[in-house]
Length: 197
Image (cartoon, rainbow, N blue to C red; front, top):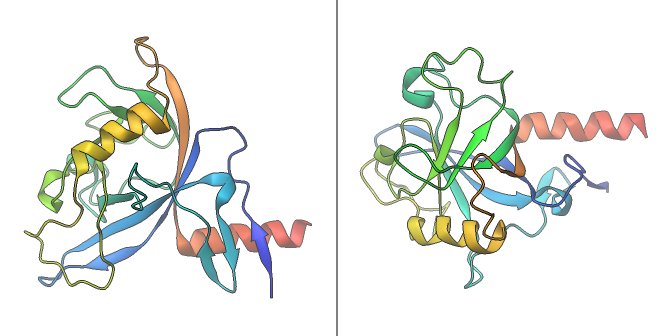
C-alpha cells in the first residue's frame, strides 16, 4: 500500500482541482470536482483522499465546468487547459470575484487571456468559466437543465472573504494558484514522483 502526499504547489493558498467527469441524463458531459488545498491531497490505493476546502457550514466546495466549449469556443471545443494558473482578484468584467491567468496555457485562446471564476448553479451558467458551489451529489443523474451545484453566490463570497482573506483593493493582485488536472494525469505525476524518490 502506497501513500504519497502530492506537493504540487508549495505556498499557502495553492489549490488543486482533480477533475471528475460526469454525464447528464441527456448525455452532456461536465466536470464537477472538489476543491482541495494542494498540500492536503493524498493518493492512496489508486484513489484521491484528503480534506477538501469546505464552506462555513462544513460543506465540500465543488467546481462545475464544461468538458468542451471552453471559454466561448476559444479553446476550439476543448475544456480549460490543464496546468497551473495564478488566481487574481478580479475587479473588471461582468463578475468581480476572481480570474485565472497563465499566459502560456491561454495563448491560443482567441477570445481572452483570462478565465473568470464566478457564481452559477446550472451548466448553462458557464461558457467555459469555473463555477463554485456546494451540494453536488455524485450519485445523482442530473439533467442539463437541473441545478447541479447550490449556493454558488454565497460560496464565491465565502472564498473571497474567508479562504482568500478578503484581499486588498489593489487590482490584479495575485492571491493564490490553482492547478487543474485530470485524475489520470495526477496518477501519472504521482508515479513519476515515486520513481524519482
